[in-house]
Length: 103
Image (cartoon, rainbow, N blue to C red; front, top):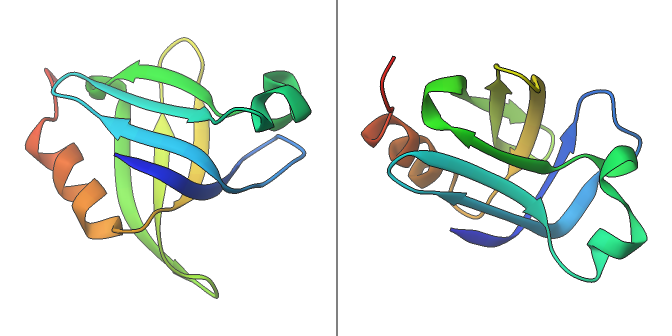
């Protein structure tokens, strides 16, 4: 779990800077804004309200001017593309590989 991640969601207006919680369980990925940012940038504007089964998530490393990031593609009923900067990108990728859920 990373409680101070940053990122962008394709199609949304605002980037999130160190105000995202990213967590992976054995069956789900959860990406959400922390309080009080959730009140400042509501979900329709900023995005970042995802709690999805791992079978709907694909992840790949992504390198840009910020360094190592993770690109998540979420399919299913609410598709989304997220670019996340977490403290340990390799650990997030490993957690997603370790518990891929039913495919």
